[in-house]
Length: 321
Image 1 (cartoon, rainbow, N blue to C red):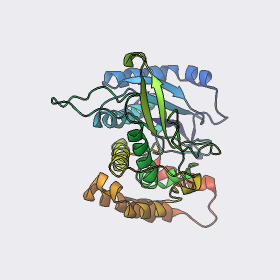
Image 2 (image 1 turned 180 degrees about the vertical axis):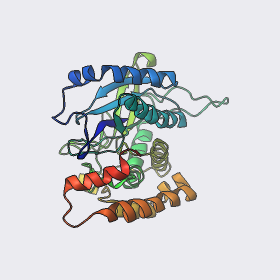
Image 3 (image 1 turned 90 degrees about the vertical axis):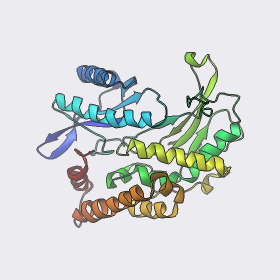
Image 4 (image 1 turned 180 degrees about the horizontal axis):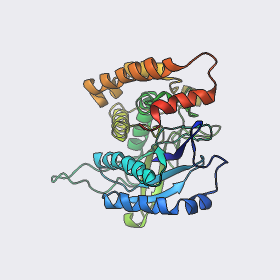
């Protein structure tokens, strides 16, 4: 989870580092007490913390949570967001998961790191993660499902107009893979990787390779439960239909350029709609139409500057997210 520390000034919301971004060690030293309290609060709530670190944006931080099975990981992220906000408030600051809250901001993300595991045994307990002996084709189909449904995943995990300010909207989805040599990778000329498979080794796995999959599409404003549901639904569809990745970069799907086109993508993606269920899908779509497009966007005025637009978005989104 990534977020920004902000404070309210005379001209609106600004970064806690308005003069520019401190390097990582300086930022951690400045906010040592806050970070220490955050880690303690998360662990007291039963949420495992792997790391807390500064990011490239002014006043931007990232917390990596420990792995959990299934929906429990999304539960941790949901509760973790509230704890981050409360700890910041204890220090007279505002922590926001609004992706771009001010002009100095780098877009914040919600990264879904996951592994495929073997089927549950008769007791319903999950076994060890699939390791290097697992059929690589299963992993490729899963990733192909994420690539195929990337526009729909984006539309579900970019729930505000502010999310479409990042570097992703309107371009092709990209992916990468390590050591699965037959997998095409159109990322050589592109700086951002949205989806990937990467091998890793750890002591707890006995030094064996396990494959970690990452979905880097969701914005920090996304619901963790929706982001996980969309990821799983897309991956399963890839396996069931034995989807293959595009062989050339120009064949990769385009991510929606704005919220209106994102909603159109959702209308056409039955897998993403089914992942939410009819009632939640209709609620999500209507919320975007009636709040974001009919209210937030409608407040824009002619010749509005980028700074003025951000202030308008912050009025609606910053404290809520």
